[in-house]
Image 1 (tube, rainbow, N blue to C red):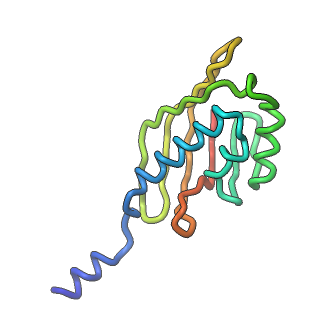
Image 2: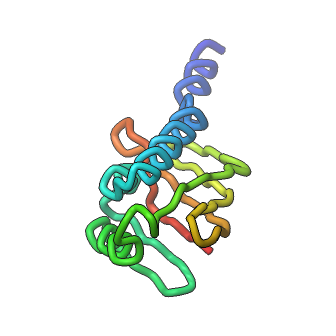
Length: 133
């Protein structure tokens, strides 16, 4: 019986505090964005990130960073970002996160939704796939 209990306790399961770690990472992303810091915003992304949007698919952290820098060349274009997290579904060392985003800018407000696939990479939660719409 003790062996079975140890097997269950040590077996795969949701990584403790995945919810908290992911929420914290997204809060740091929001702060970095609102400070005009795209490299800081990108710290939540894995090196193997693939970003999928209506414009297509871009893979690799360097390429995704370049796209952000071209699309948002200054703080005025970046505006103030606000995330709305709908759910975090952890499973082992991965998690799906869904929610909304809004950019509040002087001339307009834009927004949409996202699905993010996260992985725990050596103790740090990073986004592997970002489907933003």
